[in-house]
Amino acid sequence: MKHIARKRFGQHFLVDGSIIEGIVNGIAPEADDQMVEIGPGLGAITNPLLARLKHLTVVELDRDLVSRLRTNPQLTVIDQDVLRVDFRTLASSGLRIVGNLPYNISTPILFHLLDAVDVVKDQHFMLQKEVIDRMVAAPATSAYGRLSVMLQWRYDMENFLHVPPTSFDPPPRVDSAMVRMVPKANPPAVSFARFSEMVQVAFSQRRKLLRHTLGVWLANQGYSGDFDLRRRAEEVAVDEYLALHQALPPGTRSPPSDMG
Ligand code: SAM
Image (cartoon, rainbow, N blue to C red; front, side):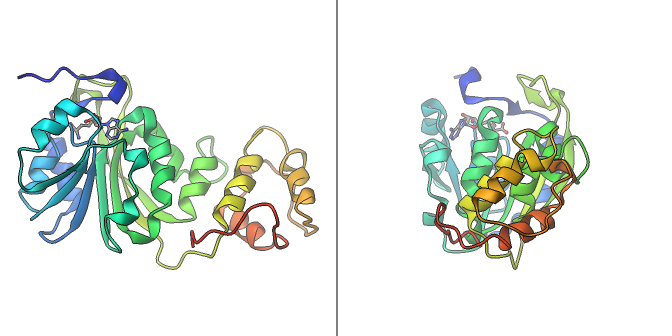
């Protein structure tokens, strides 16, 4: 029976054979990989991946699609909202995560996966091109923001394939692209909650000088160093945010996490 794409699940199915080949070649699956696909849908990427893998775990929310997927013995199907899946339970290391993500929840998915980053080997995702532009943006550009800093401190990232709307059925209204995300091998030790709060405050009013936003927050944290606050948030490089975080006096408000 033909599946009617459901808007609420962000369903845009890939139908372009050469793009699908480009995605799978970019992922370069090996038979024994521990791979999870988010949102397999009708299997556009799933099937060519399965041609190269012994086994694949998939996470799909749409019940109709889940019952189709369950007929394939090579698949383990998790019928849950991806934001409720604890990826740490899927592997103790070496996890490869892939997917043409539902665009309406793509940023929450990226932040959710940060919780499991230390068991991940790499991630390959289809996203709105505009979101990938923000992920990989350099300082002092209009795309550089909270998403850039919160991902770049932990992953090396590259946009490896442009995908036009015509590659999907139904076509989305925006251009898409594929991003490769590889966790950094020796990340700095970071209190994730405190770093996240600091970056959020810095970018809360990106047109203002940092002394009006981050300056107030730093004073509340008891910081009295010489960080230059006569700049805008977008002028500060990721390494500078990290160095500032490391220079904060011991915190009482945000408990340390094991994100590093
Ligand atoms: N991989 C397929 C393809 O490329 O043709 C489908 C991609 S489609 C953009 C997104 C997929 O994610 C759909 O299959 C949709 O049902 C699924 N999905 C949407 N929200 C989800 C959620 N919260 N958890 C898990 N899967 C979800």
